[in-house]
Amino acid sequence: MAKNGTPPEIDINNPNPPEPHPNAPKYTSVSELTELITVKGLTCEQAGKLLGISKVSAWQMCQRHGIMTRTGMDKYKANRADMLAAKGEQLLKTLTPDEIKKMPPASRVVSFGILTDKERLERGQATTIIGSDELSDEITKRSKQIKDMEDSLTADGLLGDVVAATEGQDEGENGG
Image (tube, rainbow, N blue to C red; front, side, top):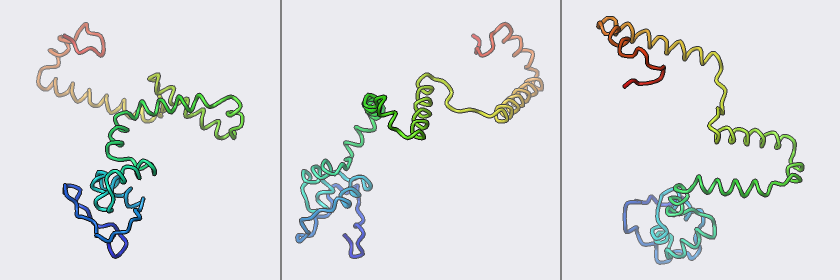
């Protein structure tokens, strides 16, 4: 710690961080360890050296206090969807009809809305409502783009060629 109580600036690219002071206290601050690992991105070994503890002690503190290490964070990011699905299933299995009845009415309504949104998302259905004004504006914008392209093709004498090339094709096909 610096004299003003803030952690020292650390070069996370330095493979050999400075050794701690030989008279460093045995107490290790969980908040300092958390900052070094989660904010500064240091490994347990690097954070341990700065705090005067071994990398094993730093790792054990992380485990004990729920501090996610870089390796843990990488694993979490890679498997997040599966982990959330498993927790969701676990949570829903514990939600009995009696538990639902005990929920305040507002919580039941909010839970229903969230589950409805997630179900629609999983089924590939709309989860938001687009106002007719927005839709009308988008149609107007696209119609203008089409008109501009037609005008450009007409000016270049290519509109007849494009129409002839696309006759008989269903809308939405690219032809070919």
